[in-house]
Amino acid sequence: MKRYCLALDLVDDPALIAAYEKYHEQIWPEITASIKDAGVIDLEIYRIGVRLFMILEVADTFSFEEKAAMDAANPKVQEWETLMWNYQQALPSAKPGEKWLLMDKIFDLKVQ
Image (tube, rainbow, N blue to C red; front, side):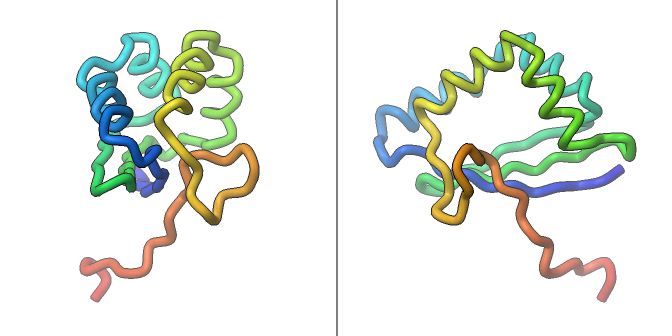
């Protein structure tokens, strides 16, 4: 199993942040299925202010490229992503079209 951490920002508007969190209280079942079908074993999202932090635990066979291809071919995932983009904003370092950015691990207590 592998673990990845990603970051993204939300639009700085309390009403939009509340709406975003409300959507995440009951994710559409098609979205949950698409996540699991891609080999994601566990996924958690945390928030502080407008910053989101996602932890993915994935099967050894997981591929971001394959997940992106699956998502592109899934109309319900595209609908969800379009909806979520109303609440999200790219990090300042993101390239055009990038959303969640992969974070670099800089410390691991287990290897100390």
